[in-house]
Length: 235
Image (cartoon, rainbow, N blue to C red):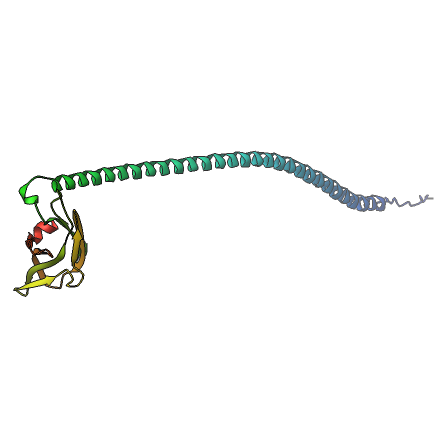
């Protein structure tokens, strides 16, 4: 006789852990996301706050630097103005110095002029050409000045006309260039008289001598002839 033992089957309930895992995993992920978001948000806020503080500091520094730059620009502008004033002052002093030198030279020239005019030399008696000067204005264009004088002691007005010519050569032939006008070439003075003429030389004309002829109205007065070499005149 045998005894049959009842048969039992052991079963383990594995569904509950799996369900728990399925629930916990999303919760963990969600919690991690929330934690990360909060942490990143906190970090971002902290960073923004720090940047704002730094920006405020930089703005203060920049404001101070702008004030310093503005002050330096004002000082530089003042220095430039002072420099311009000094330069203008120096230029004015130089102009005054040049003017005074020019005035002194002019006065010396006038003194020499009157000294020669009053010289007791016998050559200085009567009507004469006192001085001639020539200035080149441009190529072949000149300005001529001729000063006429007469004896100053007991001088009376003397009148007449003058004739000024330039003698030279052109194409190897002697040629005379008339400088004074035949109509308006009169003089009437007591002490001295200045004749000013402008003229241009023809192409190919080579001047050699300037000739000045003075023809007084008074028949008792002698005609005066004056000549000067061109090279001496231009030098």
